[in-house]
Image (cartoon, rainbow, N blue to C red; front, side, top):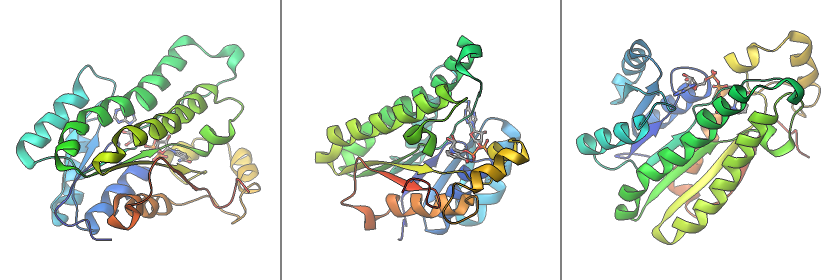
Length: 244
Ligand code: NAD
């Protein structure tokens, strides 16, 4: 699955799934730029990726023009982004009756609007190259829904619809756009859940365990590679068997 010589941008690469994706793409040969929300986080990513030629940069996906400015700076210095992984995401859980407008807006901005903005910003370079891979991190929750996560489910389902539409728009230019929809993965996001809830989740998983970040990273690396050249507009469910 060699990604040799390709520039890959991974948002939210400071920890969890994004960190595993960045490290995996780098091991496959890509020059990986991983983003973190703080300067210190970006430095830590640089230290991690330096042996493989990658580095970290600071990015808050909700800040005005931050995504566009970052991609412009990367492309000026290193050339067009060949692989974009839209991974950054947050949760603001709560039952709908009590959900505040801010909880809805924060999720839409961070999880969905950022995907639109980053995908649009890399498009010019990919169109010119007549090649490109965009992999969006959706969620099993965007496919199945989940009580207490109406905002998050709406954003993740939105990513799936966006992916299908963009794939139709850019396929003729050799660009593929796909989603990976993780099930419940052992990261800070799920470690925040009460133990009883985590145990109940494991009961719904055919393979009987939460996923590892590496399980998601391996699926992303496949979709980012030439091996997946004829796959576009799809959602790859990587959830240990939750949707059967
Ligand atoms: P995490 O909380 O460990 O990591 C989230 C990453 O996103 C961090 O690097 C964080 O800095 C970054 N981020 C958050 N807000 C940001 C912002 N405003 N700008 C830029 N970056 C920002 O969570 P994770 O579990 O590694 O989640 C990664 C992705 O996978 C998310 O999109 C999440 O919705 C999705 N996902 C996770 C699970 C799971 O079970 N952990 C399941 C399905 C989908």
